[in-house]
Amino acid sequence: MSQAPRTVVVLAAGEGKRMKSATPKVLHPLLGRTLVGHVLSAAAPAGADRTIVVVGHKAEQVEAHLAEVAPAATPVLQAQQNGTGHAVRLALEAAPEVTGTVVVLNGDVPLLRAETVSSLIEAHESGARGATVLAAEVGNPSGLGRIVRDAAGNLERIVEERDASAEVRAIREINAGIYAFDAASLREALSKLSTDNDQGEEYLTDVFGILASVGHPVGVFVAPDADETLGCNDRAELASLRALMRDRVNEAWMRAGVSILDPSTTWIDVTARLEPDAEIDQNSQLLGETTVAAGAIVGPDTTLIDSTVGAGAVVLRTHSIGAEIGAEATVGPFSFLRPGTRLGRKAKVGGFVETKNAELGDGAKVPHLSYVGDATIGAKANIGAGTIFANYDGVTKSHTTVGEAAFVGSDTVLIAPVEIEPGAYVAAGSAIQKDVPAGSLGVTRAPQRNVENWVTRRRAGTVSAEAAERAIARKDEGGEVSTAV
Ligand code: UD1
Ligand code: CA
Image (tube, rainbow, N blue to C red; front, side, top):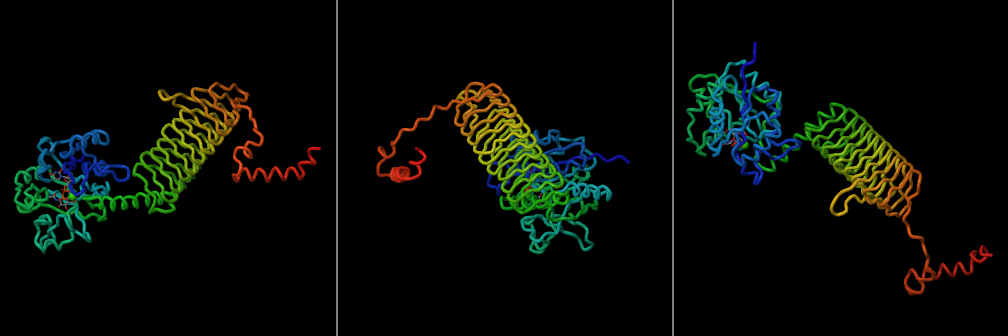
């Protein structure tokens, strides 16, 4: 039997006043996707022929986001937010050809699982109903629509809290804001909606009472996990949803073989990917398109954004954006990897090192206190402590190349564009602006001169002068005399 046509309608036109934000509520982020992004991805496996997103408040912003995350979705404008029923009515008016099943989802229910959407659709379609609502039994139903059943347990209507009697408010079975409808029944009921309620809006929820009253079968599908149905109305709720999502994501990765030492302080975006035997230590965040391969150790105190960590690498107390860290490489503590950083196998970036647009070959090392920008560093090269790749002359950026197994002494400035050829050395403290040929030593240090007794004469009476005088006296009476013979 071929599947009946399916349409998904996501409601995302509201401002979300209680968020008190310049950003529309549905665009607030939660572990790698926006609220509406999560809802769209939960709806995706339903295999809709068509997805409509009702936009209104700051529509341009929401549309721009949709173009990025769900380019196949059609935005429909609801210029004035006259209620969820009004929103769905506009969506269907914009799509008169729609028949079959219409799945409607509030745009602010980010924990919803794809399997739950599928089960709802299945329950709805197999029951040949006019409408099915996703419901949940919750501890605190405040603010939500209540599911009112008759004596036989059949759905009678859905009542908003602000329109409810004390008796109805006592009901703890709530409307999650997720529904499946038969398109024709929905169209008919929407045309009968009134605004005779506390908010003076067209309520989508009234569709259930309207259909039930004419004997059209309507039903309830109870969510297996009530947490999935939680909506987001303010920042405090957003934070609790984020924590629930964190726990869900962490548990899935742990069951897939990843070690997470402290799940309560580990935040992994839904877009990140990890392999079994990766280990994530406390206070770490894996964000965006980050991947961590088998046997790698990330953390503690590490943030990786759109970064790749190879098998067996160790990344400790590091902040990394857009970097590729090779297998068995070591990074940190206190390293800052910026976009375009590529570390080869067994490469090392150590403490207080910043890299940007920098490629380190296999086994290359920048162990301490350096800035490496716009550079190619060959395999097994060693960059001494405090080396600065001076890539910017105030106008343009230039590139520096350090060849295989070259050795750059400490406190060197490499002034780009410049090349240290394979196997060349640079003396500590040099400012290098000419290429150093293979096998040569580049040195720009001035010869050292000691001005005798300068401290005792020019800094007389200081602790340094006193220390110097004592040392000189010891030399005069001690072994210094005999060795001078
Ligand atoms: C709605 C339900 C309520 C349910 C709750 C679940 C109605 C009348 N009530 O209430 O029974 O328990 O969701 O979270 O439907 N929206 C529009 N256009 C509008 C109004 C809203 O697109 O004119 C969108 C919002 O952007 C949001 C969603 O619809 O994504 C829900 O709107 P909201 O105002 O949060 O509805 P609730 O009062 O929470
Ligand atoms: Ca809501």
